[in-house]
Amino acid sequence: MISRGSESGSDTATFLVFQASAERRAERLGHVVGPWVAVDGEPSARTARCTICGAVAYLRSEGGLVGVAGALCTEACDGGAAEPG
Picture 1 (spheres, rainbow, N blue to C red):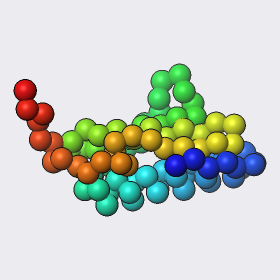
Picture 2 (picture 1 turned 90 degrees about the vertical axis):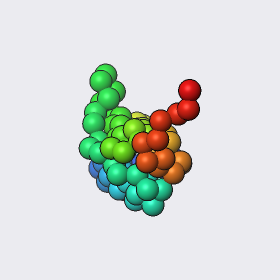
Picture 3 (picture 1 turned 90 degrees about the horizontal axis):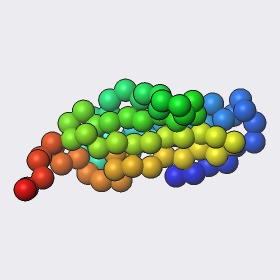
């Protein structure tokens, strides 16, 4: 998901909208979303992790662009199942 905002005030609001949207999507996929945490050295980025399976989402807002990516928003929670190996 990517969006383009035109004002810095709207950037914060857009960031929060994308964060909420990412959480809703993750929950529909069965994830339990942990807290969003700042990324070291990246003031405009946050990550969140599923407390069950560990899937991650990465949310970034910079220069009027906002986007979210990661398995937390694209793959169903596997319930913490270990990979065979």
